[in-house]
Length: 343
Ligand SMILES: Nc1ncnc2c1ncn2[C@@H]1O[C@H](COP(=O)(O)OP(=O)(O)OP(=O)(O)O)[C@@H](O)[C@H]1O
Ligand SMILES: [Mg+2]
Image 1 (tube, rainbow, N blue to C red):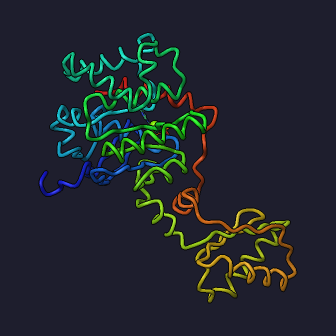
Image 2 (image 1 turned 120 degrees about the horizontal axis):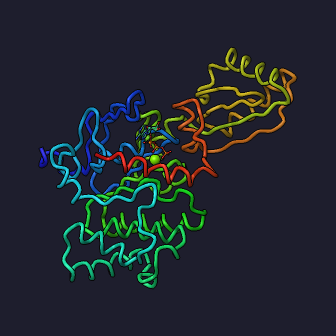
Image 3 (image 1 turned 90 degrees about the horizontal axis):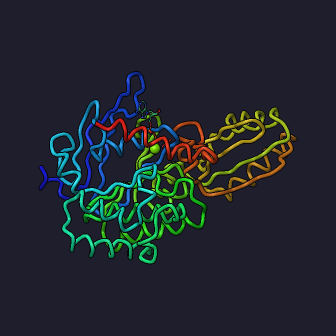
């Protein structure tokens, strides 16, 4: 079995997790290949942390199972834990200890000897450029530095797979960029397989080799960012009208008379604006302008852009992933509740 799937770092088989009436995760089947930087993209409450918790053997699945680095999460949790590092959504650092002390405790937990711990602490701190801060208490660290220390801690015992649950949640854009660089470096230079969860579209888009989009505990789309966007069938044109009547008239006319246009793949309306997906946007716009002139409709603005993962999410779910601003911190704290509920 292990030999047969030797390229696979993770394979899940119908993983579900129910909390009384809440079905947090529903029959998830995903495969992550060795060396991949795999993204689990989904809105608040989609089930991302629950799935990570199960794969990291912190939570027991209600149904299904998974193999992580060849080991079954139900029957071989110790072997799974030795193969993985985890960076949780909420910080689990001891604020009163120094960076070095936090790493040292982790090394002891994993049975590393004194010499090995000393050497490894230096190595992992170097990776995240924190050696100068090793002997400062974590309380003095910025949010980004704490994140880097947590990544370093996750790497202490030489894991093959690193789970990162919302690695840049609540960080400012510059610090986020910085963390992205470390993640890329670890994946490409140290060849660590990574599974990261995020609700930031651009994070998944620019970092991940492959993405699974999760909503209400189910995977609704999977592929490389390019594949997912290409599935939408081209450029996105948005037309804005001065009122809803005009927008509706335009859509009706287009649907009734322009079905023959091979470039147009999808048309939908929300309020005064219309979205059209077209294989060749540049060619479709003049046609749309002509129709609106013929119908005596007044187009207020037109835009043409390439699809984003936001559009992919909208296409599959009918809604936008909402960016949660001020409550980000609350969500980071929320994960402690999950850790407490670990078996
Ligand atoms: N211990 C628990 N008891 C009951 N319900 C829970 C528990 N943990 C999570 N849930 C529920 O399960 C669902 C999935 O939660 P989860 O934390 O996995 O989502 P998430 O995708 O990580 O969300 P976020 O982006 O906010 O971190 C939510 O509806 C959540 O309220
Ligand atoms: Mg979460």
